[in-house]
Length: 180
Image (cartoon, rainbow, N blue to C red):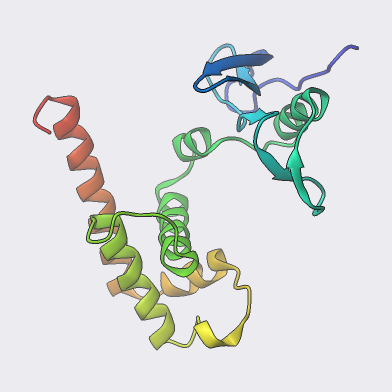
């Protein structure tokens, strides 16, 4: 079966499908597509962990489904988080991080209590609740990117998120320089 992959939208490079095997308690095969020139990549899909396919009940993908999903993502411009962040404008990054932080606090994502991420996420959630953009008792499934966009009209929120991003950058630089 011939698979047609579009050229990389970022650099025009050639895309190639990959299967990477990770060994833990058993071999897990990850299916993904990557640009051979700039490294842009799709998410990795495997046949061990359950996914909701077309909104149906969670179940593991077949090898064929995992490969098809990676190809479909590539051809439709759906990339992994690292690729998206590398190619976003600063404005898009601020919005993305704000929505990500709101998801942490709203959905109760496993984040170390007291960490910078946790503290920032809960500060943003509290601000969103005070502005009546979120209400826990509503039972509503909020589009947190829309909430993040609305919150970012406030200079205080922008400052909180920009400070958070600056602290992350500093921490990463310290780690890279052997200071962390």
